Image (cartoon, rainbow, N blue to C red; front, side, top):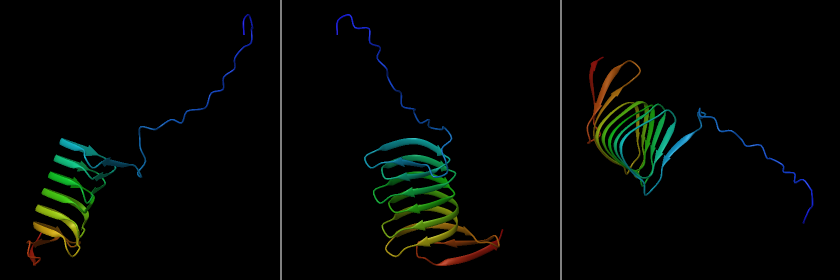
Length: 148
C-alpha cells in the first residue's frame, strides 16, 4: 500500500484487425426504420428493409426485404424483391419477384421469375442467350421482338 514498490504487470490481448477490403460474403444492410435519400454505390450484396429514395448501383445482389421500400433506379447483378419497388430496375443476370412484392415501373433483365401473388405492373425488356429481345407487359403476355 504505502511505500510499496510493486510493479503492476498488464497483459494485452491482441486486437483483431478488420480489413478494409471486405470479402465477397459481406452484406450491406439498410434496416427497418432507416430512410435514405440520395445515391448508394456498393460492391457487395445489399439488403434493404428500410426506405430508399434515389439510386442504387450494386455490383452484386440487391435484396429488397418485405418491409423494404425503394423509389428510384437500381442497377445490379442479381435481385430478389419481396417489398415495394417503383422506378427503373436494371438487372444484368437474374431477377426474382417474390409473392409479397409490389413492383411498378420499367425492368430490364436477362432472367425473370415472378411468384404467384406478386403485384407486377411493369414494362419488361428481356434478353435471352441468343440476344433476342423479349418484352412483357403487366398482363403477363410475352412478345418476341427483333434480334439485337
